[in-house]
Structures are given as C-alpha cells and as structure tokens.
Length: 347
Image (tube, rainbow, N blue to C red; front, side, top):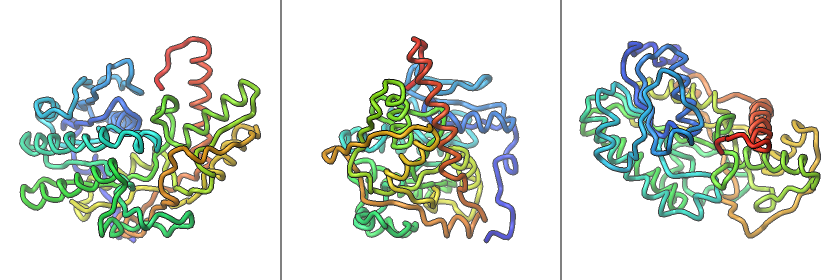
C-alpha cells in the first residue's frame, strides 16, 4: 500500500494553469472537464470534432473548440499554452463498433501522434493518454473465468484487432516521448467505463447502457423482450465514471507512474446475464431473453488486476456495480422519456 497520500491536480497546479481535454464532447472527457471545473480550475479548453449540440456536456465557463484532432494543425491550436493535456479523443464505441469499424479505430493513432507532439512543443509538462484493456493479449481472455489481467499481460503482444493495436502502439509513443524528450506521460488502461451522460443508443453504446435501454424499451412497449449479443456467459468488469475520474487525476500526477501503463478498472467481474439480472432488479421488471449468437461478442472474459494501482496509489475503483447501475439506469430512463415526448437528447 502507498505510504503517502497520492497527489491530485490541486497539489501540483495553479488554478489558472491551462488544462486541455480532447474528446470533450464525449462521455468520459466531458465528465473530466466538469470534474476539473468543479475543483475550481478556471482555464480549461475542451476540444471535440462534433458540433456543439452533439456534446453530452458543455460546462459553463469552459473554452470549447470544435476541432478534428486527427489533423496536426488542429492539435497545435488545441495545445497552445497548455500546462497539461488529456487526450481522450478516439473513434470508438461498444463491441459492435470496434469489431465492424477497425480501420476507423486504427486511424485514431493519428490523434495521439499529433497531439503528443503538439503538447510537447507547446511546453506542456504532463500528458495523459486513455488506453484500453483491449490492448491485452487476447489469448489470455478466451475463458469466461479468466484470470484478472495484470499490466505485464500486454506482452507478448496480441491485442484486439484494430482498436487494441492502436492503443498498444500509442502507449509506446507515450513511453518514448518521456524517454527521449522528457514529457511526463500517464497511461491508463480503461476497463469498460459506464455512467450517466454517455452513449446509450445508436450503435456505439456499451453493454451497461445498451441493456438498460433495452429493458426500458421492453417495459415501455410491453414486449418484455430483450435480445442479448452472444450467449450471455461472457464476463467483464465495469467501472463507474466517478472512479474513472479520480483514477485519471491520481495517475496523471503520480511521478512513480510516469510512462507506465496501469489498469484503471473495477475488479468486480460479472457475466452479461448477471449484468442484466442487476438491471432487472433496478427496474423492477423481468424480461424474456433471446440470444443472438451471430452478433459481435468480443473476448470470453476480461477483468482488471488491481495489485499495481493498490500498491502505488493505495486506492482502486470501488463503486459497487449495482450502485453505479442504479444511477445510470435512472439517467437513461429520463433521456428515453424526454425523447419519447419529442425533446432533443444526445444519444
């Protein structure tokens, strides 16, 4: 366990230091912008390529820029004057997206390549990269009763095609910018982040949001039917957004973790069927389950080994899945109801 309390951003930064967050129209990055704003940081630049009305969150008082950071010149503009850069921009989504659009996922390597160069040239001294558990060797994830993945399990390399390989290569880029150019880089391997203010319909949503929406629809239309991709036995761990934000902050500001990929995820492993059980309990509604065995399913099992993060930070994501899902389900139900009466919502 860590002997000293882990540092957070307020321990190292002045409140008027410029923080840059890319992908800020999305779920995690948009929540991160609000997290920093709520801590009293007055200069935050939020960047995303989507039109502003498609952003999940717009935090008042934050500079918002619409830029596609897969282009070098846009990265230079985004990073101008930055003290810290948080790169969470990527073309990604749930399993349906990353299995069907591997080229789009691979092209996200342009984002990190241009962003880290622009951050270093702009004089930023810390750079965060959002990696993924998809970077792990898929041969270790065939069994639904998988062993929890530890950081060294990314090698020998055999990442998920497309998205996983992009993340693994970008990790190496971050490590070399520290080794050769002295830019302090932080690399967190996210494990299935969920919560309010995220994608819940349209094809990019992940299992917690997709199943929540399907239960809400089944309850509303009286069909009671929910289709599950695969046979429901595949297992994952899911991390609530508040744990993710706290983890990003501590990892970014820990010198022991510079250029060292680390798991950021819950160790509470559940099957897809068990996740649906939890959602049914929250909804107070039982559904009829059908299984699409031809749909994208992903690896057999994936869980986070939190030995390293507990040793270095004395902390790990700890929000119980049912507690986080209760908040997530309530938010999606609210969005569903608003859409039903013709209100504009972001999906």
